[in-house]
Image (cartoon, rainbow, N blue to C red):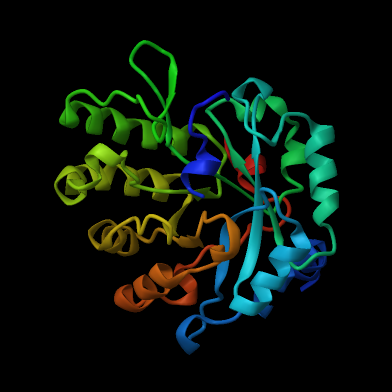
Length: 288
């Protein structure tokens, strides 16, 4: 990727019920073993953990020390997207899943762009515990794609950008068979100071409605401290579920302080929290 700043650098029931339960992966069953937030009944799970240049074994040490269960994600999509690691075939995806088998982690991917599904069979994707994606790479008006965290990204008129960005968030949720919408309501640095003014109730409502319609969980992100309370309150009242994610690399991975604060301020219960869908019910299997 040359001299550009990469994302990695930037963010340095009876028989049927019994059959379903037996089909759940060991990592999904281990949800019950995750520590509870603030002494309540909500498991502390960081579903947004990247391996980067470390090992799963090292991440497990951090997980145990921090008292947070991890969900590991690697990028998935077409090779030309040029991430240091990006899986683009069934064979690569299945090898990755196999490498995590038997370890006390969830197995996920961070899907890239709107067409990542064309790289894989439904059967292969269904072997994952979950899929997350975000809207931080946006399709521009001329049809090209831009990574909004990179230097040189042109915003233009802030209000026009926000309308387009909001609609793109909705498109990501509607077009992709996702479990989790990650980094929600994140803004490029030049706009971040105006977050509260730019994320109007009408813009928030569009994303909340899409998440509810397509049964996509909203990540409470502890790296960027997003979404903020007005969005989260709106989503909770609508019945949207939440996941937790740090998206932090290195020794601070799994720090979920903002997530725990939001659990308390929103009065969330276990019913509000995302858990991976069982076999046969995953978005890749049920979305039209």
